[in-house]
Amino acid sequence: MLEIWDRIWADVTTDVVASPPAALVPLAVVVAVLAVPSLWHLARHVVTIAHEAGHGFVAFLTGRRVSGIRLHSDTSGLTTSVGQEKRLPLSLMAFAGYPAPGVLGLGAAALIAAGYPLALLWIVVVVLVLVLVQIRNWYGFLVMVVALGAAVAVAWFAPTDWRVGVAYGMAWLLLLGAVRAVVELGTSRRRPGGGGSDADALARLTRVPGGVWVALFWLVTVGCALGGAWLMLAGLVA
Image 1 (spheres, rainbow, N blue to C red):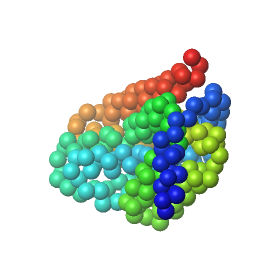
Image 2 (image 1 turned 45 degrees about the vertical axis):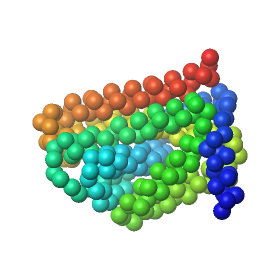
Image 3 (image 1 turned 90 degrees about the horizontal axis):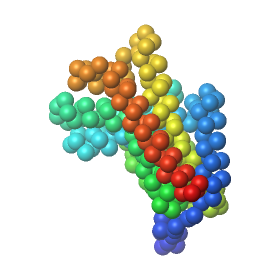
Image 4 (image 1 turned 30 degrees about the horizontal axis):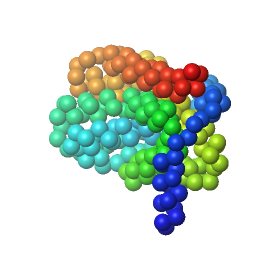
């Protein structure tokens, strides 16, 4: 057991200097994934996990108790919590979902830029464990077990160059996937029966139109994507 912790601690504290291909090749892969519907459907589960983790984290911060998280085969999700039905905590929780992948991606980019892409992989493992214990449906449990198993396998067994590449890929997927998810939200709200989104929940809670919230989601996620790209690319092209 001590050897395991020593290995993890070495990864967490190791400063890795990445080469330009380490950032650019994963970026190209993520762009391709976003462009191919079948691949995006699979990768979107990662964005959904981050989305629901955002809901759950803010619920916890505002004094509510997370009662469960569900992940569905259509890549949607649902986080439920119990507590006082005050508008501010409910609004903050509803707002947190769509920006969460972008904010997490920005944090991942900052960690990579600081030279700790291997630490990022182990942080991902911890986040997945925290989400897993809140899952309340079988499909969500399967998704989380696969995601957690893949994260541990990469963090522990993959060569260092591959681990660095996966860390960059994870950051790019969160940053760019967050933007695409908001674009999809805007499209889905214009369809019949598309009034059950976080933006619509915020509209009911705040009386601010849902379109305004979609615009705010877009501004936050695009800002995170631009900031994350600058962090990960500026040092490589300097």
